[in-house]
Image 1 (tube, rainbow, N blue to C red):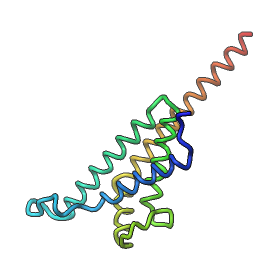
Image 2 (image 1 turned 120 degrees about the vertical axis):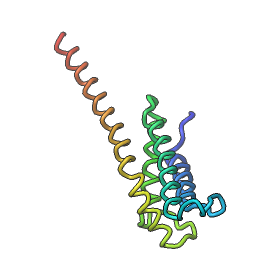
Image 3 (image 1 turned 60 degrees about the vertical axis):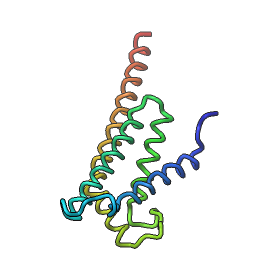
Image 4 (image 1 turned 135 degrees about the vertical axis):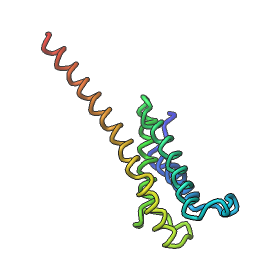
Length: 143
């Protein structure tokens, strides 16, 4: 009880990933184009979105609750798939050019940091396994 099935969890993570991808494009009504050019606004928007994504994923992966960590991994996986330029990403009725720009921006602003965040989790898992193994070895050698 209280656990999401793998399918439901992946579909929720996919929906959130799609929302982030849809937000990737700047909303021309929200910005003053007289202050700076499109490229600067896009870079700010993409950096802001990536910071938000990474903050959420890091908090999920840093949890001591394995169920929460699984949610973080599912979210990271769906983000990578959604921002890829293969058939794993959703069509969304957008142009191929939009998908390519999203992919390149995600690669430029997010992918490396996301990779490092997931590596931090794997490092923690390996450390915990070594600690458990060391405890098991110490207790068996003292018997």
